[in-house]
Image (cartoon, rainbow, N blue to C red):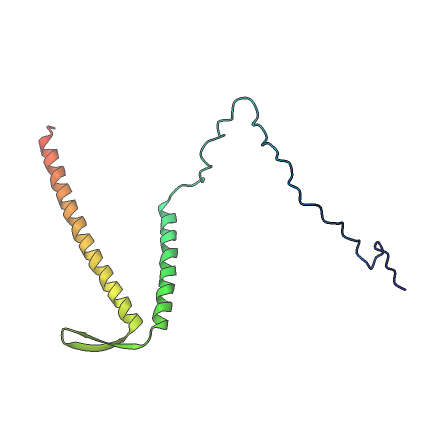
Length: 139
């Protein structure tokens, strides 16, 4: 025999009626404690124990490089349609993804070559300026 008593083990207790939608009274924020503030209060957020390191930058660059490599591999795998190319009378066919990757690599190599030439030019000018300054100062 089952009982319909709300407090019996088989039946959950009845839910209370919903409360009327009344706004709670606004409360003022607590007042700051009186007296001098500790030296760390109001200071910048806590800095990490170890700052910037070359090893950390290397790891970040490696992770970013691997993510880009994975995206490139996906791009190449999805663009395998052979595409005909012509340049200076030469005719050949390559998968589209490989052709775009080769174009990006050649562009990167050109950028590195131009950047290297500029760095060497600046080093040469700096050496000349340093040598001229060393000659002008009496020893």
